[in-house]
Image (tube, rainbow over the protein chains, first blue to last red):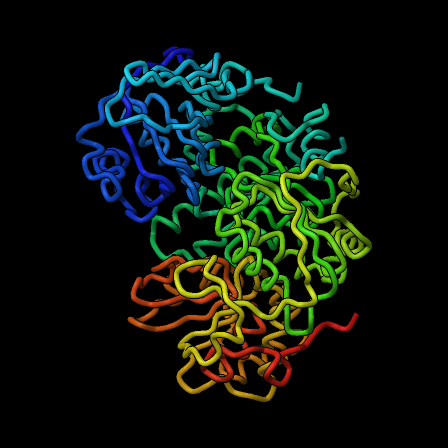
Length: 168
Length: 426
């Protein structure tokens, strides 16, 4: 999968989502990822899972994943087929977990984007477009070190082909 | 333009100068996995399938959250951790040894200038020793054990200057609660903090660890203090490697500078459910409590237990109040025993339990609250239901305030009770 150019429909989530609460088994011990995926974000966006199609882009209000540290939230979002997440700001640990698991996360203004909008995300150029709304937002492109992790599908697949990863 | 402590430590470990906002690949000096995250970490390690993990010897596995294990699954995770440590040569701290953030410094695994990661947000604690400590997940630690390095986004820094000295009865906990009231929970998300000033210099190591640890509630990626003679003496006494102290440049670029009049601070408390709903203790005195808890990686150290014993010496906790003290580590427990603090607290009606994460969160069943019951705790988080019952409340304060409140059965300003202004002789 190329992560250079991502095209998908926008699926909106509100701000300050704690993914440990809404997308992990932290408070649902014993439930597996498939179960969590069926119920992801239902308390904050009841129709999220029914609308979501693999390849869609999550567009979340600021501080997505704040207070969250469970890597499982990203595993579940990958299971759903989330192509990328766009938010004005991410929780620190969630941001790490997303990169480590090959899920592109883009810090970008989301004003004006509505549910279902066709989005185009050009990661190397640092541009988010919603053509039908004439929206074009620029963001700082992810550094090359991060792009290579994403290209590989995450840190673990990356290390399998770069076992000698070290300080430059 | 000069560099912050965070930029200097990450730069030194990346082999090139690092600036806030950049991403670097940096050498990691020490890493930690605790039992609540071990299952995921071991799963990621299995996926990685590395034949050798040359850096496992610089990794500690700590059995503290499931201490003791409340379910067969947790006990089985412990079996897997012990086996992994044995086979791969990692350092193991078993049930009862203590909380990860206490046993790592005590074990001499950290020193000034280090870069350390752990599978826990409170890994910021190591900043008290002038080490960049930060929380990560299982994938990260797997990569560290295999390659010895990890990627980091270099954080911007907020510099907090604490002018003057804290008054007796006011502690680092009260400083952090004050900051939480000002910046809000996660108000420092992504950022590193640097604490400096006269009040920090006057603090002992225990209180400095609280300052760095509790920065996690502000969302901080790291919370760095500069090293002084107290730091160096402590590290030497605990067998740490040769320190490489790192100071910020005078012209370092900060995202924000905050000046606090430390001498004017009074004891603070975070009210039910929200760690940033902070108010001065004098404004809530009289609030009834049912439980008084002292412990956790935030405030379960010797100075915290001394504060409690100073208040409760020769007294009894109020009728109907249940008080639990959980030392942060076996070493802290032993020191408290030797000083007679365990006897003082036990005679006063408290239960002193084995070292570990204990009553911080409802994992082990150490403490389950009833409806409408109110807990005052020296822990770090008070989310609704954290102690197993969303119909109870958790209020957060210093060990001195918790002990004073245990004595009266109502939230009490420690400065108003005998022993409540105890402070270690300089």
